[in-house]
Amino acid sequence: MSALETHQELVARMLARVAPEPHIKTKDIDGIVDYMKSPECKKIMVMAGAGISTSAGIPDFRSPGTGLYDNLAKLNLPYPQAVFELGYLIERPEAFYTLARELAPGRFRPTVTHSFIKLLADKGLLNVCFTQNIDSLEAIAGVPQELIIEAHGSFATQRCIRCKQPYPSDAFAAHLRAGTIPRCELPAPTTPTQTEPGPGDEHDAAAAPPIDNKYAALAASLGKTLDSADGLCHGLIKPDIVFFGEPLPPAFFAGFPHTLDADLVLIMGTSLKVHPFASLAEMGACPRVLINRDPAGDIGTETDDVELLMSCDDAVREIARGMGWAAELDAAWAATALGGEAQDASTRSELDRIVANVGKVIGVKESTDEVDALAAGLAKLDVRPPPGDDAGSGGGLDRDTPADAAA
Image (tube, rainbow, N blue to C red):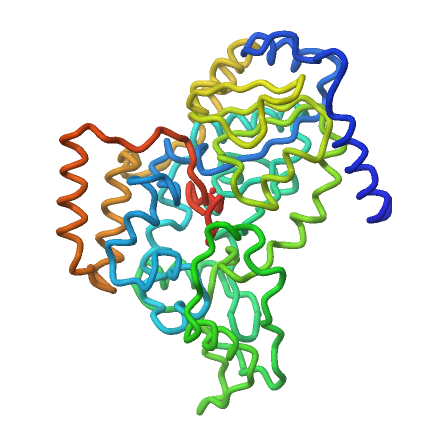
């Protein structure tokens, strides 16, 4: 199918979304289970956001009060999102690498929801899993890599920001453990490399920060050939997560036709605020199920929409029980247990530790006391942020963030 034919088919499916008779007869877990058991449901598309990873202890990026950006605002950053900009990486690399050490795979265990996605694959029902998250927990849980499309990249691979050559994962991990800054040791490029931004922040336009001209100039300098005394590149090594100003991976756009094949879309732990990821939910004409603490996007407006406003882990346990998969789900999750020290810290304690460690290398803003005093005053008044699995982008590494994958 050509690109034009695919586009035409997508438009036709969107126009035909309203079904005369719903496929899901009741707007609850029983209705979802009945449909999943039917011969009509053979291909399930998953859209995953930060909310599926918060129970692993990974903070999301934008939740008021508990999100990573709100808490990074206490530190000496020009703005919280700067830690996911190429220009700031060049000027203050220690900030990003300290954060990367805290968020990189290996410290966190997949959640029950990740194991449920793996179970869908085992049953031959998973057609594709689009994820905003950069934590790689889908793959760690055992979801086949060929069924995962990481819309905002991941920490699984990395490369030099100057010459664009891949960098060994074991060497990168060793630098993170040692607290040192990884740099490229290959010969310096002899011709300029292409570093102009692609589509830019189209995946996160509403939340993109006002990029400092100084940082933009630093990022623009990457494509120039620079002399080095020893002839080596010495470019910084960056994980293949999408920073502000960078295009989304080609695999994301190439995956659009999957929306035409799906018999059911499970939208889990995402606020559907960041485009073009959120647009995936609007492309097909099949039933859509939202599993999230809060309403999201336009889910609930169509005949075959179902909203399960609850935690992702609780919802998938109920669905698995209805499908007769409860024991298999428990076994799949048990298989993800980490060796060594148990990773059972709360998201709040993880967030406090992350911010404290990054603060050690870049400092804390003088206004922190005022912010803490305001927070204490709001606590006395019992003013709380609205609950939500996901408020936005990277971390459950949501990128409902920039880096559920950078920025």
